Length: 102
Image (cartoon, rainbow, N blue to C red; front, side):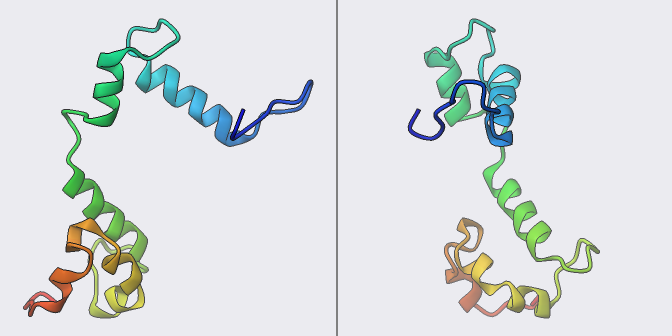
C-alpha cells in the first residue's frame, strides 16, 4: 500500500502487473503464494547469476550507440557517468589506469 493503493475499480499500473508476473514466474518457486526463507535466499543470492557479466552487458547495452557490440572511446566518454557509477569499473577507479584497449 506504500507504493500503490488500489482504488476500487481502478486499473493497476503496468509495473504492478510486471511485479506480479515476476513473483509468480520467478520468486514463488513452490507456488504457495508467498516466499519462504529458501525462496528469499535464492532471490537475494541466486546461484546462477554472474553479477560482473550482467553489469558489463548493461554498460555495453546502455553505451553502445551504434549497437555494434563494441565500445569506442567516444561512446565511453559520452557515457562516462554510467562507467564512473559502475561496480564493474570499481566506481570509476579502474578508468584512471592506462588501458591499451581504450
